[in-house]
Length: 128
Image (tube, rainbow, N blue to C red):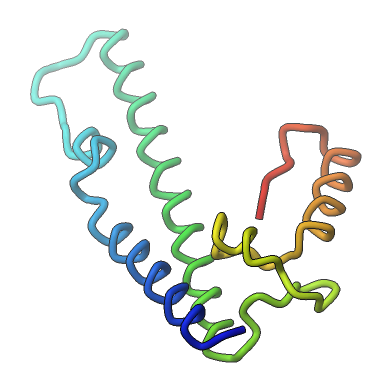
Protein backbone atom coordinates (compact mmCIF):
# COMPACT_ATOMS: atom_id res chain seq x y z
CA UNK A 1 0.00 0.00 0.00
CA UNK A 2 1.18 3.49 -0.81
CA UNK A 3 3.02 5.32 2.02
CA UNK A 4 0.81 8.42 1.66
CA UNK A 5 -2.34 6.33 2.06
CA UNK A 6 -0.85 4.60 5.12
CA UNK A 7 -0.01 8.00 6.65
CA UNK A 8 -3.60 9.12 6.10
CA UNK A 9 -4.95 5.98 7.77
CA UNK A 10 -2.55 6.41 10.70
CA UNK A 11 -3.64 10.04 11.09
CA UNK A 12 -7.30 9.04 11.03
CA UNK A 13 -6.76 6.24 13.56
CA UNK A 14 -4.76 8.46 15.90
CA UNK A 15 -7.42 11.17 15.69
CA UNK A 16 -10.12 8.66 16.59
CA UNK A 17 -7.99 7.46 19.51
CA UNK A 18 -7.63 11.04 20.78
CA UNK A 19 -11.39 11.42 20.51
CA UNK A 20 -11.85 8.33 22.66
CA UNK A 21 -9.41 9.71 25.22
CA UNK A 22 -11.44 12.92 25.37
CA UNK A 23 -14.78 11.11 25.73
CA UNK A 24 -15.10 12.34 29.31
CA UNK A 25 -17.30 15.16 28.00
CA UNK A 26 -19.94 12.88 26.49
CA UNK A 27 -23.48 12.66 27.84
CA UNK A 28 -22.69 9.13 29.08
CA UNK A 29 -19.78 10.37 31.16
CA UNK A 30 -21.97 13.07 32.68
CA UNK A 31 -24.52 10.38 33.65
CA UNK A 32 -21.72 8.42 35.34
CA UNK A 33 -20.67 11.49 37.32
CA UNK A 34 -24.20 12.14 38.53
CA UNK A 35 -24.64 10.81 42.01
CA UNK A 36 -27.85 11.29 43.92
CA UNK A 37 -27.47 13.00 47.26
CA UNK A 38 -31.06 12.37 48.27
CA UNK A 39 -32.63 8.98 48.94
CA UNK A 40 -34.07 7.49 45.75
CA UNK A 41 -37.41 5.80 45.30
CA UNK A 42 -37.71 2.59 43.29
CA UNK A 43 -38.25 4.37 39.96
CA UNK A 44 -35.20 6.60 40.50
CA UNK A 45 -33.10 3.60 41.47
CA UNK A 46 -34.22 1.69 38.37
CA UNK A 47 -33.42 4.68 36.18
CA UNK A 48 -30.04 5.08 37.88
CA UNK A 49 -29.20 1.39 37.32
CA UNK A 50 -30.19 1.66 33.63
CA UNK A 51 -27.99 4.75 33.28
CA UNK A 52 -25.08 2.93 34.90
CA UNK A 53 -25.53 -0.08 32.59
CA UNK A 54 -25.50 2.28 29.60
CA UNK A 55 -22.31 3.94 30.85
CA UNK A 56 -20.60 0.56 31.30
CA UNK A 57 -21.64 -0.51 27.79
CA UNK A 58 -20.31 2.78 26.38
CA UNK A 59 -16.97 2.37 28.14
CA UNK A 60 -16.69 -1.29 27.10
CA UNK A 61 -17.31 -0.42 23.44
CA UNK A 62 -14.81 2.44 23.61
CA UNK A 63 -12.22 0.08 25.08
CA UNK A 64 -12.87 -2.44 22.30
CA UNK A 65 -12.49 0.29 19.68
CA UNK A 66 -9.27 1.53 21.32
CA UNK A 67 -7.86 -2.01 21.16
CA UNK A 68 -8.83 -2.30 17.49
CA UNK A 69 -7.18 1.05 16.74
CA UNK A 70 -3.97 0.05 18.52
CA UNK A 71 -3.95 -3.20 16.55
CA UNK A 72 -4.47 -1.36 13.24
CA UNK A 73 -1.62 1.06 14.02
CA UNK A 74 0.60 -1.90 14.88
CA UNK A 75 -0.31 -3.52 11.55
CA UNK A 76 0.68 -0.27 9.79
CA UNK A 77 4.03 -0.32 11.62
CA UNK A 78 4.61 -3.97 10.73
CA UNK A 79 3.60 -3.57 7.08
CA UNK A 80 0.55 -5.83 7.47
CA UNK A 81 -2.17 -3.17 7.26
CA UNK A 82 -4.67 -3.91 4.50
CA UNK A 83 -3.90 -7.65 4.41
CA UNK A 84 -6.61 -10.12 5.45
CA UNK A 85 -5.68 -12.00 8.61
CA UNK A 86 -7.28 -15.22 7.31
CA UNK A 87 -6.57 -15.51 3.59
CA UNK A 88 -3.74 -12.95 3.21
CA UNK A 89 -5.56 -11.25 0.31
CA UNK A 90 -5.65 -7.48 0.09
CA UNK A 91 -8.50 -5.81 1.96
CA UNK A 92 -10.25 -3.43 -0.41
CA UNK A 93 -9.50 0.26 -0.03
CA UNK A 94 -13.25 1.08 0.13
CA UNK A 95 -13.62 -1.35 3.05
CA UNK A 96 -10.63 0.16 4.85
CA UNK A 97 -11.97 3.66 4.32
CA UNK A 98 -15.30 2.60 5.80
CA UNK A 99 -13.68 0.64 8.63
CA UNK A 100 -9.94 1.32 9.03
CA UNK A 101 -9.68 -1.26 11.82
CA UNK A 102 -10.82 -4.09 9.51
CA UNK A 103 -8.66 -7.20 9.75
CA UNK A 104 -10.59 -9.33 7.24
CA UNK A 105 -11.38 -8.92 3.56
CA UNK A 106 -15.07 -8.70 2.75
CA UNK A 107 -15.22 -12.35 1.59
CA UNK A 108 -13.73 -13.69 4.84
CA UNK A 109 -15.85 -11.29 6.93
CA UNK A 110 -19.03 -12.51 5.23
CA UNK A 111 -17.96 -16.11 5.83
CA UNK A 112 -17.31 -15.40 9.52
CA UNK A 113 -20.69 -13.71 9.90
CA UNK A 114 -22.46 -16.65 8.23
CA UNK A 115 -20.75 -19.05 10.65
CA UNK A 116 -21.72 -16.87 13.65
CA UNK A 117 -25.33 -16.67 12.48
CA UNK A 118 -25.45 -20.42 11.99
CA UNK A 119 -24.07 -21.28 15.42
CA UNK A 120 -25.12 -18.30 17.55
CA UNK A 121 -28.09 -16.78 15.81
CA UNK A 122 -28.43 -13.33 14.18
CA UNK A 123 -27.86 -11.38 17.44
CA UNK A 124 -24.16 -12.28 17.56
CA UNK A 125 -23.12 -11.27 14.05
CA UNK A 126 -21.01 -8.13 13.92
CA UNK A 127 -18.93 -6.37 11.30
CA UNK A 128 -15.19 -6.40 11.98
